[in-house]
Image (cartoon, rainbow, N blue to C red; front, side, top):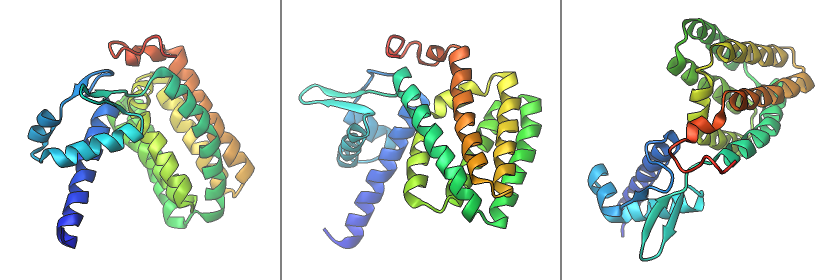
Length: 231
């Protein structure tokens, strides 16, 4: 296999992997649902080889269970997984915010300011989808500003893993406003170069987000996915 063919193969596998990963995390495929190689390959217009390779990668991430001679079944994210992720995110988001106070650029600070401005507008209007996108942008700017490739990759992964519950959590009218307020406080602490304060606020932001999910019945997100008793 030449370099061009090899590159195309891995590029195709990556595309299939990310498509399936997003579909699982968004809830398109339900927990325990079987994914069939042939059906996926036909749907995505690819051969079965990149689908099979993507299945193996998804299994390594714990999102798919492959049973020899039976099939591949969605594992998905459970209520327990969400609890674990938010506990870890609290610590890592805090570390990220602290590092950002040392490395953030003026351009990145302007990006945060714009996100806060737009977030407040959409929060008042109750635009959940736009606010979810802006929430992602806010955190992504922080991840870039922390100046740590490894920390950024881990946090982005966690952020993607809980995309469904993040969107659901922002349907709460009160939480939408509070979320923007918390983002603004984190931004101000970073602007003031107060690393300890930024760390504490980012950690608290994650705790509050998870507490709000529990208050509103986190298990509702997983109803119908065979996950109600997993947390």
